[in-house]
Length: 122
Image (cartoon, rainbow, N blue to C red; front, side, top):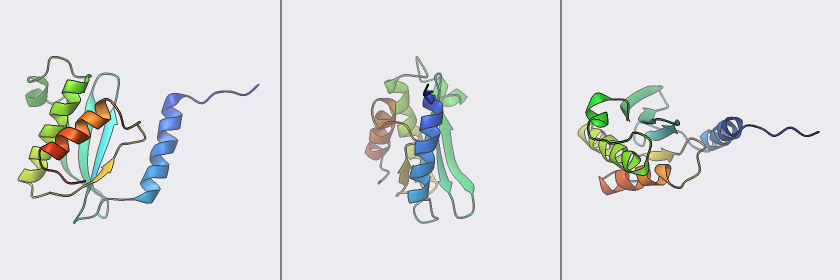
């Protein structure tokens, strides 16, 4: 009998394949996205030194106060706008988008589109 792998295992394996193809540099850091059942998290990371330069999540008070729900497409779009504004304040214009093994649709796509509209290039 063949056992089926869990979705989280499949996502982790996809993420590792993606991470082998690119990494964030000082000139073009990596925008990493993680989505749980209740919240979304976004970080801009310089992989050469292993530092998180900018982060935002739906858990933070100032972000959560603006949202009705923290796990829908509207919350993802707002988070994309917030992460882009914080990146622009730090002088980051270009990033590499790391979808974290998640399918590029729905919440992940909404976050990416909102970040692009707010001024990030990827």
